[in-house]
Image (tube, rainbow, N blue to C red; front, side, top):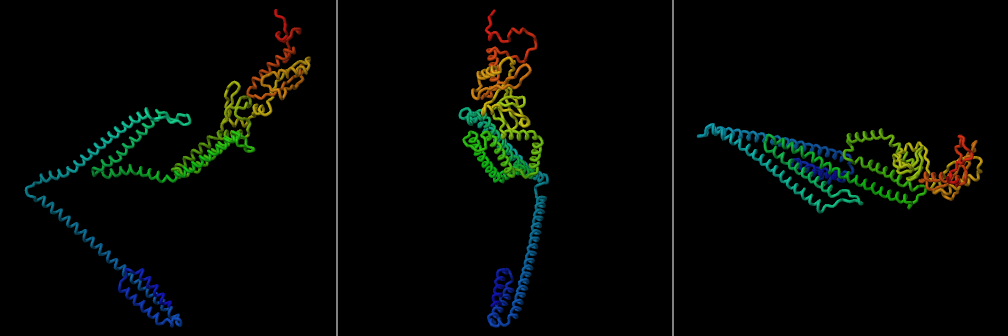
Length: 527
């Protein structure tokens, strides 16, 4: 049975692979296989006993079939070779016959023309020239016709666009409305009209160019001498257009990716802006995060998000993988890095100042010898307005290396202590001096009643002690005016009490009976 199955498999394989073999060989293979099948049926019981003999027969059968298949393939290849040779010979004979017929026909026409009765050589030459000039004349007429048609198209295009221009002007005067965004007039009607006219001119030039793209190749294609040049010119025009269109179509997937990234970053920034506004308005409170940090932190995060967006979009930009694009990027980065060391230093200092919170907008501060109110804080500089209305611009890096005095912060929280000193002689009781100074401070506008003013004796000089009056104020912006009022009140109180302010002490000799107190306070008699 094994032998029978092997034979059936071999026969099936030969049926699939041998559709084009010789019929005689197929019959021989069939007879051989049939004999093997008959032998297999008669000797089925003997196979069990003589397994080795059957194995040898199967091998012999397989070898015979392989030889038979190889012989069939060889004959098929020889047959194909003979067929190809016969076809080549037939083609050569047909070509030779055709050439012979054409040559004979040409010879006959020349001979008939030479022996035609009643026609001399001159008449034949004139007829040939006429036949040659006719195609040239047709081409010239067609050339002129194309030029005329193109000229008429130009005139028609210009005429239509002049009408369009007049329509735009009427539309601007009657129906066109300005573009307004949040009470800001972005484009008025005059600018909109100019923009529409500009785009109409661009469209006119584009249409004229398209007309030339078709007319010029047609003109060159009229004459055989310039026909190839016409095709070349047409390809010069079409190939860039095809390249641009193909590049645009191929770039559409990248454009969608860029738009998705941009929209994601855009809405993330909008959400962060809303949160920063809530923190700045103290509607949302975060422990350890001050409200004045909200907007600077938002600006920092926004910058980082935009930088991250550019890094993500960069590989999808047109030409990002080209060496020129990469070289320009490296060059720009090098210039920025070399020329922005001071700028970067100011930015870092501005960030540090923001989170150190030494002052806020509107605070009265003193920076070295400059005193004023903070009117602007930027990543690069801080601007102060002095009491004399001078605007001083200070780099943030300079502020980091200098000491800053904030008058407003202390005034809001604790009350700012203002002070001034006077020197009074030892002949005046110190308690009286203290009371006079305190009364002068209490009568000064801007000085708060609580905490109470107080006096410190800072020095005991050879000729006088030094008294320092201290008072609390809340309005640091009016510091200069409050100090001026305090000095005036001190003079008034001491003059009213008949106490001389002997500082600096006098060295010039004078009449000791005369007082330095103004007569208005002494109530002296008028002369």
